[in-house]
Length: 149
Image (cartoon, rainbow, N blue to C red):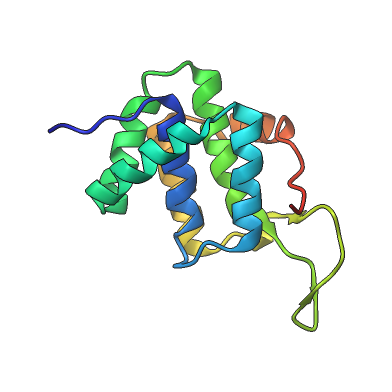
């Protein structure tokens, strides 16, 4: 059976691949994804369906390729937004003092928080979706701040 993703599933796929790129899905990345669900109107059923498909596929590269195939059919604005969400998920990090998380309400978002595996996925998506750096910067300007949940 040939697998496909709809738009929301493709968005979930791309952000999941980048969130797990370093081998763990950190609490701040989870917070970013939860806020993406709300901001983009992603319903629980779409999350469940994506998780079932991802479990069946069980290969990050195949999941990525399916997501890219779907996103290539979307309007340029939605392609930019997908890469911006990938960046947002990767760039969010905790503000910690001596290993203890501070009591901030907004997670720190900075390019210095993105590790090499994450930036590889982001740059690959930028190239595959033909999203320029200037388009990405504009897309990021429209992203919400990631709050601690």
